[in-house]
Length: 158
Image 1 (cartoon, rainbow, N blue to C red):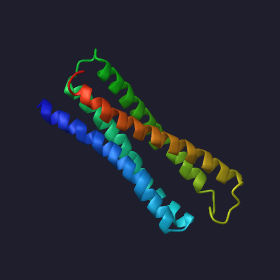
Image 2: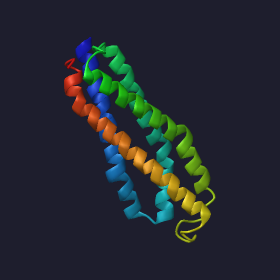
Image 3: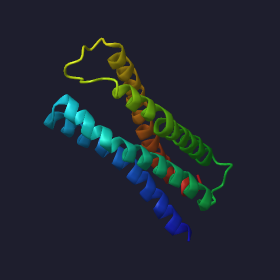
């Protein structure tokens, strides 16, 4: 059973980092290169709820799998893995249920990002929320990559 759990854990981490990297560095930029800012924002806005739920689901699944693996909790790799997983779960929960809904609410008050002045209060607020979201997204992506690196020692029990 343990080899199956290890494989599922590795698959979960791979989906986490690969999925986030694909969306962040390939899909989103391609959409913004292909469409006007308003239309691209609309398209990406439709994708975000699923993306954020995906990020939340893979971080929760990875945490569950760590407990099911029954690794030695006294190892540094286990403790570091647990810290990274709990941090990712907390950040993803915050993004999914607080930050993203707040950004959507602010975005609805901006008639057009192409026509409205960049220094309007709602655009400034959206820019602030978007910057927070972007930084947290990169941190969660780096968290997943760190977990992949740690997994070599962690699944061995090191």
